[in-house]
Length: 261
Image (cartoon, rainbow, N blue to C red; front, side, top):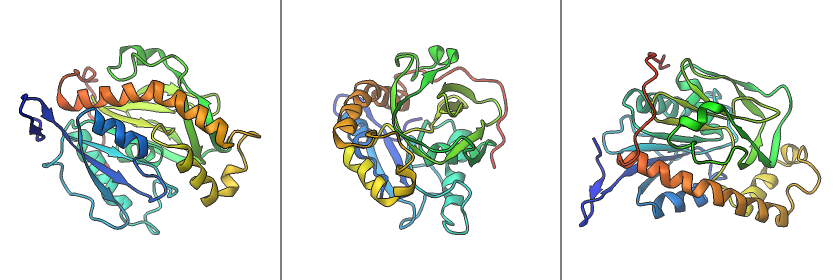
């Protein structure tokens, strides 16, 4: 049942809990797209605020990226609360859109595994490729087969959660996108960034940035890449809001009970 506010036209305005693990990874364009599609966003900065214990006041969850490791609980004790609310969302069949670190947290929260990527970092505007099963997914079906995305990570989702649908891969790391349950999506890559956000990440982590291909992080190249990303992923964000609102049917139930840890 939607808990969002009905408008005068009778359309539900869904409320999304937006979890921000790092001030360096704001909702940026994704927040703008979701708001433009009709969602109300409640932003929680995980390190400074309190992560809600339930989703009684929200119709779905967005979890953003950050530099922390998905299991770095000693340095970032709030990670436990984030993983807990993500597993709660899956159990309650509340739609989830998790990017970057958020995708890693979603994977771990539902029985997957994350580790330091043995093939090295992925950095820059790069391509991922949809898997065949993505053609039957309500959010991924209309994406091109090789969409542009922004990568900025060292860790990888090594094992997907039991029963998860594998939706996209890259030449370097297989588990780039997945769906767990009917409507919880993890994207290892970023679609929300702007050129300035990426350049801030570059300044914060020059060692990681140095692994990018020459010229990949130049402003002109990033501007061009973000235009391509918006063309593909803004309609994806629209579909996510439609899914949260109940206008888009979720994927079929997999018939598998997921371990929630």
